[in-house]
Length: 331
Image (cartoon, rainbow, N blue to C red):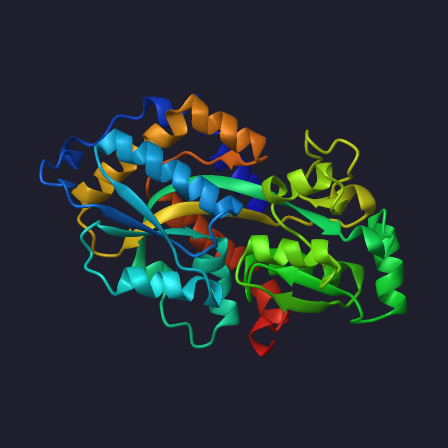
């Protein structure tokens, strides 16, 4: 099954379906957890980025639902390895969680060799939160108005264009790397410590191009700080109706969507996972959350706690051959 159809099927279980109606398991009620002890949610991205925004929404709404104080800690750098190691250095007791996504759970194993953790063995899912499209944007001083403008320049000037990413092996890098491969062009990758820094570099002219998630890009597009060239998703976005999707421009079978969720260390008791997942259901059931995700052009991804690890395995299998061919670990 193609990854796009997998995500479409999973996304179809949003609030109107599973999240609003699924009963909690009988053994989910654990009177001793969380108690008065704070729960740490370690986020591998900088404060202020789209990932941080979703993480804080989950912390707020899940915390209220399970009567817990969930504290967000930003630990950017090393493609999420720092955040992962923070979680894995703590007991599997549900008090230290990671806000993880496709970068930490899928991409890193193709970038960092050896990777000091095994996503599928060391973590267990608490719940999927959302999936987001990327938008390729350019600094206005480049003069690029369309993807074709960029392609023509890049083919005539190999490696002269620099593109930002949120970090080595991040999904914002993957999106551009895959696009380059399909277009037959070559640009120079410049990794930053997070999405805000990478986008500010493009706005400031230190780099010329980036593919941030739509929610991060939109304010800067509206303020004309960057020029949108193409939506790196199956279809156009409602907030950018004049910006074509990649497949409209002849870039066939292009499907990169970032996704996010919450994971705990493997070995965390099932009753605690179930308790945390009550918070995830509350997150998806909240009209406020739905409105904020919509404003970010993010698609809610409600489902059972096991869904996150299922998506991790599917994406690893689906993207593995392509990622291996990009030689990301040699950069």
